[in-house]
Amino acid sequence: MDQLLGPLLLFSVFIIFFIVLPQRKKMKQEKKFYSELKTGMKVITNGGLHGKVLNINDDGTVIIETGAGKMKYEKTAISVEMSNKLNAAGTK
Image (cartoon, rainbow, N blue to C red):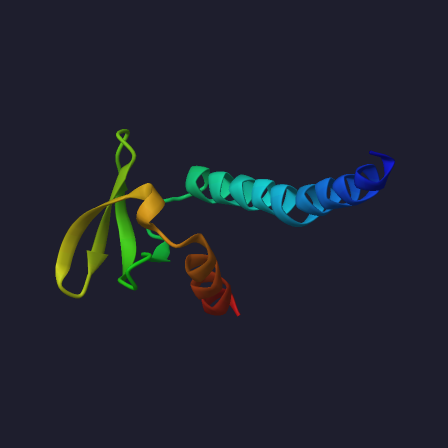
């Protein structure tokens, strides 16, 4: 029984540090991004659509203006990582 305790403890620590904590950090970053989303921000959706936020609705949707017109998306359909890269490149 004592032989199993060491590897089990090591595996538990591995799971916590390499899976749970990074996922929690990513969720906090996404929540912060969605709360700071403003009209006029350039965004990229998970599908690769580039556009600018025109309106943020209370029901969790946003109106995005693209070259093809205006489209309604869920906030969660916006790629946090790609949008941050786009906005960081635009400020340099």
